[in-house]
Image 1 (tube, rainbow, N blue to C red):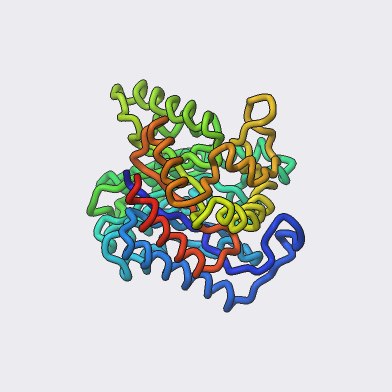
Image 2 (image 1 turned 60 degrees about the horizontal axis):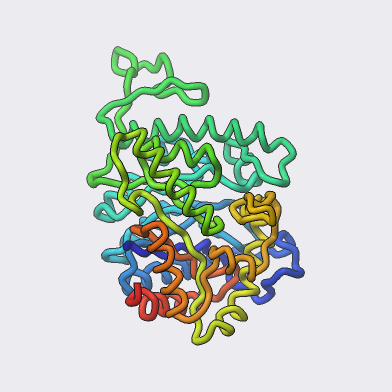
Amino acid sequence: MRVGIFLFGGVEMDDVGSGPPAATDRRYSPEQLWRGTEQILETGVLCDQLGFDSFWLTEHHFQFEGYEVIPNGILIGAILAERTEQIRIGMAFNIVPQWHPLKLAEDFATLHNISGGRGILGVGRGTVPREAENLGTKIGSLDNPDRVAADDFNREQFDEAMAIVRMALDQDTFSFRGEHFEFPARGIPDRGGFVEELTLVPRPLHPYEIWQAITSPPSLAQVPRSGWGGVFWNNHHSFIKTRWEQFAETWAAAHDRELDPGEHRQLVLCTRVEDTHEQAVDAVRPGHDEFWKFLGPYGWSKGYMGPDGRPAKPGLIPTLEESIEHKTWVIGTAEEVAETVSWFDDQIGLENLMIFPAMPGDSYADTAEQVQRLSEGVLPLI
């Protein structure tokens, strides 16, 4: 089992929880926001020293609230690559429609090569309209009244952009004509002729992996057909099992090959490890509630189970007790956390596990303690 650490990467906060302040009432200084970036890098170095397989960053923009302060995980990942020796470096996720697809391909190839093949290309479609609509796309969310049309537009952009990224990374030369992108542009003169094809420089010198978040029925169908890995997070454990198996069925139909139990799939679990179960519950509750105060309005809880046994209506703000019951949060002693991870392994087969051990606002000293507890107390048991 490959085990990685995933951080949102934000600033330390002393007022997290379900009550005030509202998410948008916080504002941090440039110095505080940059200190968060430095602390994320320090945590990545620690995870390398502790022997974790991978370290995952995320891409977000304009978040003066301090939740996620890394706008370019590839750039920060390249810095981390120079400070580490073994750990693989991934993005959960590069928001593809917010990138020029050729710049994304160039930048990823640079990270992958300079790290000696340790880059992981994580891709997604986005969450936050504030980011999307200022960076060339749209995204559907609960607070966006035109979310269906926005989501359709975003998905079209994403599909074309990923086709371009893959051609650019994998082929000596390429060209593309679509609804949203055209490469090369028509009629470019070049040394007495015209540009008919492009070649990416640099291209990857090592094999690479692509992972995408599975957040909807279309992505559950599209990702395995495309041949890359699926990441499952914030889903009721029974939904995880069903969707895990559906992914494998779609893969087998598309590629004429059965997957091993956990192959090409990755589970994300939020964790808290303390000396007792009660201490873990008390320690994680404020950060859990802040997590949902931040992300609930974007519909992130739609993978939870509603009272009728069906997926919850978007907008649910779950309690910590619901998150523990659904097994999206794994809380307790090292033995309890390891037992739940092993239970998932028995249920679905885990080749790839991504652990989210730091809630919004947690101190980085606390985060360092958590990754050490995971490394020394949990990993030996699984």
